[in-house]
Amino acid sequence: MSTMLDMVGSFIIGGLLMMMILRVNANFNQMSIEDRLELIVQESLTELVEEVEYDFRKIGFGIQNSALAIISADTSSISFFADLDNNGSLETISYQLGSTAEVSGTLNPRDRILRRSVDGQSYGGSLGVTNFQLTLYDISRTVTADLTLVKSLDYLITVESPYPSDTTYAISSWRGTIRPRNL
Image (cartoon, rainbow, N blue to C red; front, side, top):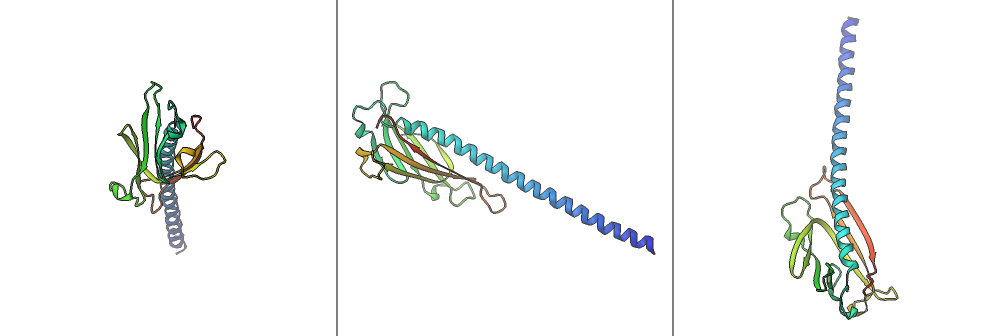
């Protein structure tokens, strides 16, 4: 009888150990997926920030009157003149955050596309951007809406994963300040 109890006890303990091992494995897999999504989001944000900063630093480069460098701007879009490729010819560069209705291929309801265009020709779009905000400042670092007085700008970019891990989307944000030399 005691042998039978030992065997039943062993099966119960073995079953519990097996369930614990399977649960640890499932948790490990879930964490691995979350880490991978976070890495993808961070890499995407890094590439986007490099591109935005390169373009924003060039605002007004090659233009005679720097007060006319910014064509239009609001809290989520900007258009400006710059000689991006340093060939003596001015280009018109625009960044515009699209609406959530334009994105249908992902599960994230906050997904938008940040469009970049040069001389009216669109160059890709950054999918997964959920927030793009601009704040323009004059020389005394006061917020201004007068585009002829702009001397610096702050931007905020938030990128989220297009697909959730469980019910959570990986998210990464970057806030930067640009003071273009040509303004």
